[in-house]
Image 1 (cartoon, rainbow over the protein chains, first blue to last red):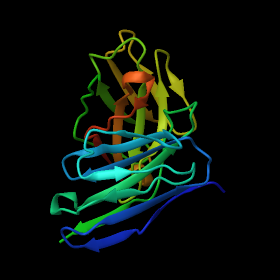
Image 2: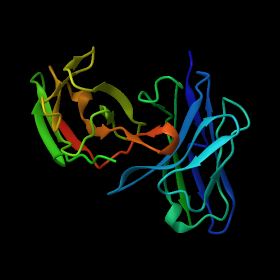
Image 3: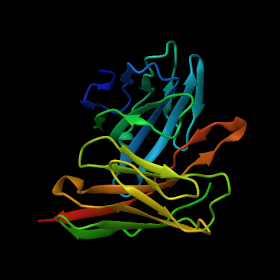
Image 4: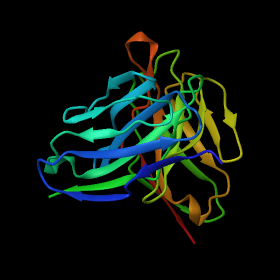
Amino acid sequence: DAEITQSPRHKITETGRQVTLACHQTWNHNNMFWYRQDLGHGLRLIHYSYGVQDTNKGEVSDGYSVSRSNTEDLPLTLESAASSQTSVYFCASSDASRTDTQYFGPGTRLTVL
Amino acid sequence: DAKTTQPPSMDCAEGRAANLPCNHSTISGNEYVYWYRQIHSQGPQYIIHGLKNNETNEMASLIITEDRKSSTLILPHATLRDTAVYYCIVRGRFQGGSEKLVFGKGTKLTVNP
């Protein structure tokens, strides 16, 4: 069955370290999204991509970057992790013709000490 | 982007209908109303969406008022597994025709035995 996976599921890192969170989907969806979720803020969009080599900034993109070299993967990189980036991160994907129905991964809980 | 207003929490008895309201008074004519839910520690799950007419699927019904300024998500026979945070979302539009979902804080629905 097609699915969307995230790894690692839990990560603890130190301030200043570079961290990469992986997202992999097997639906062959063109659209992929990264969100973060914090208490009191709901889900906020970090970056999104509408296809290979396409990336766009969301509402909270500072300190994050993404690259899309193939259809299946959209890794999220924290160039220099900060304590404010402690959060739960969700990846999602959707078909190009149905951007409404986004399928979400199980999430990655990141703690920056 | 149009904004939505939802009550922060609601309770419902198991087996009864759960009616979750949402106000979106600034919705534009071409914007859809979407509902997602998030069960504790899981990624959000798509439920239903609509433009003008009422919609029904295997999970829920969506009632949109004639002026489109508000809507109600109906879970006809709520179960304990429906306990979750429910998000009412109006689809925004970026430049270039790209679209994204903006998640607010949602309604925490608790289904009681």
